[in-house]
Each structure stands twice: as structure tokens, then as C-alpha cells.
Image (cartoon, rainbow, N blue to C red; front, side, top):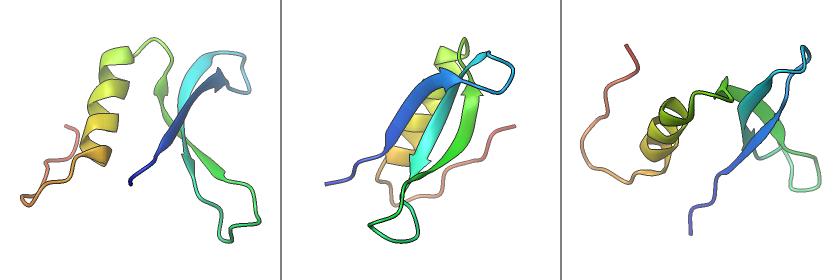
Length: 64
């Protein structure tokens, strides 16, 4: 099973943003968060999430 958590949270400037949660270096350590995109960019977020979770044999082109 493939699980990838995504959160909608406030950044340091109190703007809503989407964040990836990546596993910490050890199971006992907290996850690490990486900015995915602004909170209002729902289409962009869904496209990126789909690319990360897609299991494909062919390479996927990067964002332009």
C-alpha cells in the first residue's frame, strides 16, 4: 500500500498552502514537510499528487 499525506496549513505569512509530509529519517522521528503549492492552486495540487502517486512504467515529464 502506498500512502502519501498532504496537508493544508498556514505558512509563516499566514497564507494557506498545501504541504507534503515525508517520512522522517527514523520511524520514531516526526515527518518532514515540503511546500507543494499555494492553497488556492487546487488543480496544480491535484496534478502533482496524481503524478507522485501514479505507478507507471514510462517517465513523467516535469512541470514546465
